[in-house]
Image 1 (cartoon, protein in one colour):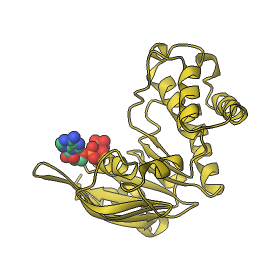
Image 2: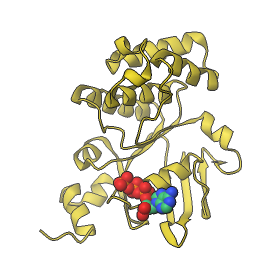
Image 3: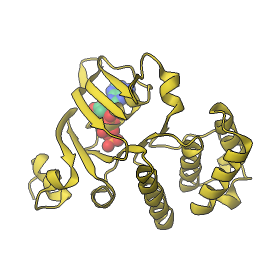
Length: 237
Ligand SMILES: Nc1ncnc2c1ncn2[C@@H]1O[C@H](COP(=O)(O)OP(=O)(O)OP(=O)(O)O)[C@@H](O)[C@H]1O
């Protein structure tokens, strides 16, 4: 579903991501973990066509994101680390705008909006202006907007930040259902317990280089993900 081949990104003299290759198949959910500034956002942004690679290729369902970004965007969704939505729209106006962009029918958008708003407990706030919403409420609207066209691939940058425990639980359920239905998810997180519970696969990035990748069990071995992570980061207590 998502194939990253030798992706490299520089900002001036700095190499933010260095020759990173990773494959995420349909039905897989992969956690992307690494220290602050490791290169997670830079990789996720390249996967959805927001950053141009300095080297390598990224394909979504076999389509090159650089060559045909529109075709890729039709089948994918990106939830950035900060829900910067259009503050002057109401929640409903924003979601209808997103649904219009993706050509989602009136019946489908209504059904999906209602179901997701109910699950994430945000229904009552949707008639209000987004500028009046809290960070967590905006994050919930961003999640609904991302799922409104039923994408095959979902990219998320720290999606649980700001969500209350019930909404975080629902989002985990939604993510697991998405993968059971044949979709794929690649998301960054600093919450290693969530990664361990939710994911089949994990990718660890350090200073722009992928230093471990595989099934959760193979990367974790007999220890916890936290132990493995601290060892790979050369952290001493
Ligand atoms: N627009 C930019 N201009 C210059 N340097 C940048 C830019 N964006 C990112 N970087 C640098 O690239 C590196 C990777 O940043 P990135 O945002 O991908 O890290 P991250 O793993 O997502 O970190 P965090 O966990 O803190 O969100 C960092 O050294 C960062 O300073």
